Length: 491
Ligand SMILES: NC(=O)C1=CN([C@@H]2O[C@H](COP(=O)(O)OP(=O)(O)OC[C@H]3O[C@@H](n4cnc5c(N)ncnc54)[C@H](O)[C@@H]3O)[C@@H](O)[C@H]2O)C=CC1
Ligand SMILES: C[N+](C)(C)CC(=O)CC(=O)[O-]
Image (cartoon, rainbow, N blue to C red; front, side):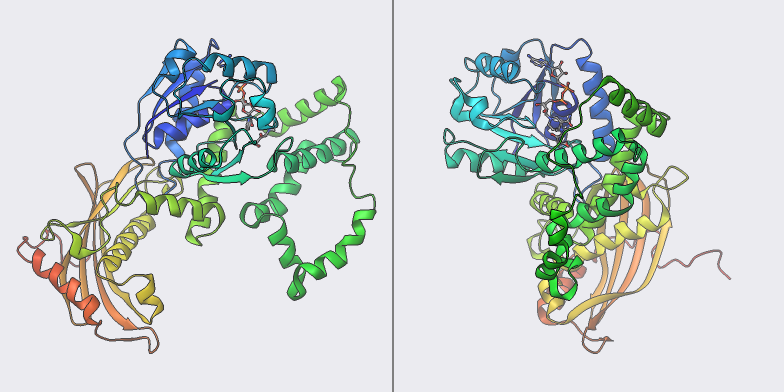
């Protein structure tokens, strides 16, 4: 699902929204009267282009068109989604909604990025009330999937469901919060940790860096993949959550937190925090820190995707929903021209595939060819259900030729030929390209295996049939240059 989105306010968050929409194929119009808006928007987009396209295993659609508009009215013409991302001031947000009222289409959704206002506060006195909904994202909006969606009685359920569908189409994870509350869910949690941290700095107990270390070397990593309660369930040992509650429940009555108290943000405290933060991170510009953060997030989220877990599972669902549009065919018998090499991979080189030479590292060629092999297996019927039933293919031999280099952010495809597919054997030939450039070839011999005995065995007809048909259809193609070759000079 694509269309046109209008972003009102193109700062940290509006810029992130613009990037998420545009990189998912939407046309985007931004209105921001700030003098520096165009430069800041480009800087966010540059970083987003570097990080997001490689996050998933399936290529994103071609980028939409991005326009910076002179007026709010111009930006919202024809927009199906308007995302208000102006500063966190209710009077300002109200002024924006009032101006939108004459220009927004009847079915359009007006999402607000507000960190803390309730939807009924945003909607109060507004002609567009029924169209306004909280859509609270997390920075960087182009990478993090969570978006808190909060409506009020003024919104009908179908509109909220439609809003969630649009957000899912952008690869996001809408969390529909059923009751209105100041600061929604996530900012309540963040605010409580922040308050506690401010006390620790104010009282001279820890520096900003020590507090960050306490998070990032420990529980921050746990939270990133399991959150709070699932983590504590495990901390209760085999007896689980009840035991955890019994052990740590009494601590709730002890002075472990100053949560109800807020330290006064005196000039002295602000200066202390700003100075400590400069000492901690001042060696990097904000844009450099964003790139470091993005590379870390991409690596972590791709690790989560490998386990189909949490934020990684959201990315996998987005990839799966995009397969058709990216030209990937589900089953070999559905190919329009099975005589041609089959598209088995179309993706962007992700940040975590790059090595010290500044190009895609050798192990990732095998990773990419492995993904292509997995798809070919699936296409001939060797899918997850079949593997769970006790059969699969094992790779017996691989020969990769590295012919040209490729850098992060480059689009790559793999097309695959079945050189032989009979009996227990499946002989594959992969060609990896970036555009017309041939980057690598991969030749792989696989054997069908009975997973109970771990021994080679002939595949059942449901797999042998499609594999044989594909091999026969491609047999007329000339033998690929380089196939069957040994490494090094002939002896
Ligand atoms: N910064 C963050 O970490 C997060 C912020 N938010 C929320 O997103 C919203 C925006 O915050 P940021 O992007 O951080 O602020 P920001 O200050 O980076 O950007 C706000 C932008 O709005 C523009 N602006 C001001 N008045 C405008 C108007 N009348 N029409 C159009 N544009 C106008 C400004 O020129 C500026 O570029 C706030 O509601 C905030 O609570 C939500 C999630 C995270
Ligand atoms: C600090 N903050 C309240 C603006 C944070 C958010 O709203 C969400 C985030 O990205 O952390």
